[in-house]
Image (cartoon, rainbow, N blue to C red; front, side):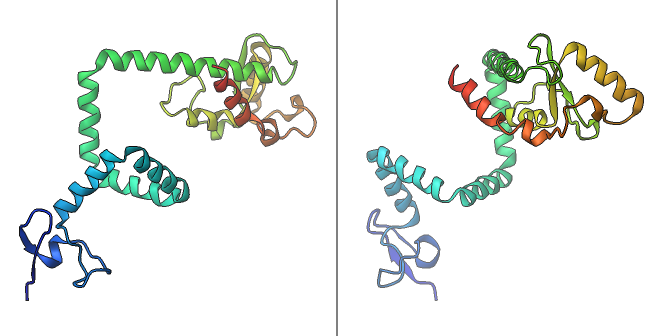
Length: 212
C-alpha cells in the first residue's frame, strides 16, 4: 500500500516512504517537509547562520576525522569522472594562473629544502656549503629530492631516507657505495641512527614555514 503525505512547506503530495526523511519524533515516523523542501530549509539556515554552521562543521571534523576522511574518499571515487573533468576545465581556463602557481610552489619548496639542509649541515664535516641529499639505501629510493611532487609530504617522506652531505663527501660516499654495492657504514658516526637523525625534522619544517 502506497501511503502519500502532504508537505507542510510546499503543499504538494508525495509518497511517504521515498520522499520524506525518517523522523522518530513524528507520529508517522517521517519529517513534515519533503526531501526537497528539507534540503532548501537546511540551505536557508546555513546562509542565515553561516558562522554557526561553519563552527559545527569544524567541530564535527575534529571529533570524527576517520569518518570525514572515509566520506570524502567514497564521494571522490563515486564521482571521479566529475572531479577529473572539473580539474581539466579549470586547467584549460586558467593556464597562465596554473603556471604561476606551479612556479610559486616550486620556489617555496626549494626554499624549504635549502633551509632544511642548512639546519643539518654535512653529517661528516658539519659544513654548510653545497649541501645535497644522499639516500642511504638506494633500494628504498622513490625519486630524487630535487623532483617536484605536488604533495610536499611525499618529499618529506623521501628526506627521511636521506642524510645531508656537502658536495665533496656526497661524491666520495656515492662513489664508494657504487663500487662496493652496499652501504659504507665506516664513514658514518658511531651508532648512527637515521630515525634519531630526523627525529626533529617535522619541527624544523614547521619553524621554517612559520618564519616565511
